[in-house]
Length: 350
Image (cartoon, rainbow, N blue to C red; front, side, top):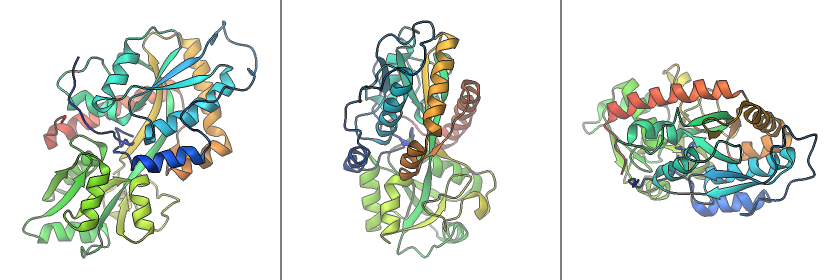
């Protein structure tokens, strides 16, 4: 099946993932700094008995994006540590294309034996309504294992804009005859849909300006060609810290420890606003429950480790340990939420 091409979300990837990635060199540098490289290290000696003989060989972890992006870096962090706990290597397999649809379809059609896993992201829940037809069902064709982490977006503006708070942003958009422009990494990315959700809640005149990736969008925001952007935190943070962009609000329910003085959108007059790129682990539907349980236990142990939490925090990511059932409920809610936003915005896959 052929898909239209879109950019990676960070999430958010957003998202999606996972949305649009920070510049590739940023993530590659981070991976190098964490000692990951682009190959997964062999695990330490197996810890404890193996349940029913699984895993008896390496486990493949499919990532729907190219090496070096946020989703890939998080996958490699998790893969190394889970391999140590499972007693077999967890090897990352990048299957990029169509906003992660290529990789998702590969896993959805793989044998449900526990040897092929997938980094399921916000993009997959957005794609359910963004694309007219998919080669997989995001809800029916996967067995959730557990959420990994969430990464918020930041509402940033050009320094020359007379806006220093969400209230200023709303006032400026209402008083300007042309409203206000907001850039994104592409139509349907979580960066784009963060802005569309804010637009739905505020009823402001906001003009979306899509780009082919986060980097050119940020470049034009810095140059004043566009006025604002709901950018992924890892992409926007260096510009905010250097004083090149002004952070107005963060899109998560809580403030970020990396920007403790930046308020949330929710506390700035819009209660309940919470939009983040997110990442989880999933297996093909029908994977045996004991295998899912073993994977969930290993994942939660990884996320509880102090070194993992520190590394995720350096990426502005918050670990989200939990159960397969919690991930299933969460992702189902995301499918519904983004369906409404996609419909209201008229977003289509590029």
